[in-house]
Image (cartoon, rainbow, N blue to C red; front, side, top):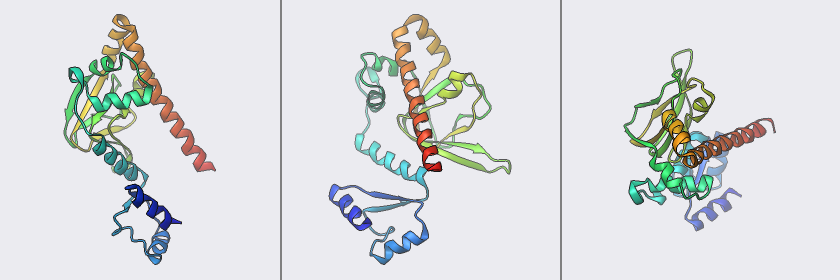
Amino acid sequence: MFRRIRNLMETAGAVLVLSALPAAVEDAFRNCGLDPDRDPVLRRAPDLDHALEACEEALLAESGGGTGAAGVDAPLLRHLEAMTGPHPRLADAVAALDTLHLEPEELLIRAGEAASDVFIIGRGRVKVQIALPDGRTLRLRTMTAGAVVGEIALLLGQTRGADVVVETPATIHRLTAATLARLEREDPELALVLHRILATTLAQKVTLANRLIEQAVG
């Protein structure tokens, strides 16, 4: 069955990423002539987080970069259009964001701090991690272009629950609470577009969490 899947991937010009491949399954693969380390159609990842990261990077490489009219980040605009649907003010929403250029190992969010802004990743990759009692850090997930970070703490008035650290050179767009409050007063339509982005992000995260719970108890 996996040989057939592998051949379908090759015909489609795609790569099959094997996440957390158990030793027994790896032995079965090799016994039927499938080598995860040498077959160009197969790729190995230590866990699901790294597997998704590899797929996201491949998609970003295919989509390319660049900016649109008035310097608006075109890939980010396309991502938000796919997420929330088209809107005539969506480009204005992107233009209303501050732009940050960060380097690897810079701290974007620190656990325990008050939340005063939301971040949307334009390019690059960040990791979400928590500190364990023994001093080690536990990586929770990786986030790449289009991901929204920090909206829950901001909307609920909570402190940050985890650190967010930049992993690769990144362009990150920031929506401050002050900007959102000003737009609510001066441009309610534009503020509504930004709230729609945050609400859609929250809905997607809740849906993903529900699926993971269903898989865990199923």
